[in-house]
Length: 224
Ligand code: HEM
Image (cartoon, rainbow, N blue to C red; front, top):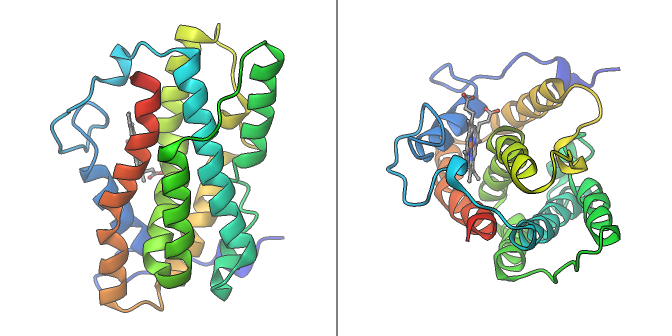
């Protein structure tokens, strides 16, 4: 059965816009023009179509991504802030899938690297935010999960075509309908944010740039 949050219509702010639309608008503007139609920034890295990925670099990205998703999942499960629990078991979790993918690479004879600075630094930062700055933490939670279902999936497809013989990793497979899973999380985000002040909302939105910076550092493993 659907929970109250899933059935609730989008809760809108004073300007009539559901908060997730504000989060999305800020995120879209931070894309480069070659990444997404709504992007506004000039590219400083090669476009995904030009990447020449290696298995080694991609493995570093997957290992670091696992560290980040494990931390996000531990934080919402532990729920230091009680309403974090709303974001536990959304169906968007990725750490188990990444664990399976890394095991698949290992069985293919690849050495799985240890986590490196981009992943461990981001995970520590998330741990710290989760305790002292819930609005900023939620910004990262939104951006990491939603980026992965959008650009992340596109990147996965390109990398797979170039170096994995089109093998589709578990990282890019969701149980059930991913659009519905995303919509459920959007509803919960709107509901939680409906009790935030305008200042808290702005603070959450302002964290988006940092989210792009940290995720960008992880993505850099693939194309350098
Ligand atoms: C959405 C591409 C990196 C956050 C999207 C979309 C594309 C895209 C094509 C869909 C736009 C649409 O709905 O029409 C890319 C590419 C990236 C990248 C190619 C890097 C090479 C990032 C990063 C973040 C991010 C680093 C933040 C950490 C988002 C968010 C959405 C989005 C929040 C909205 C998803 C939704 O509304 O469901 N991206 N992106 N993206 N991206 Fe990215």
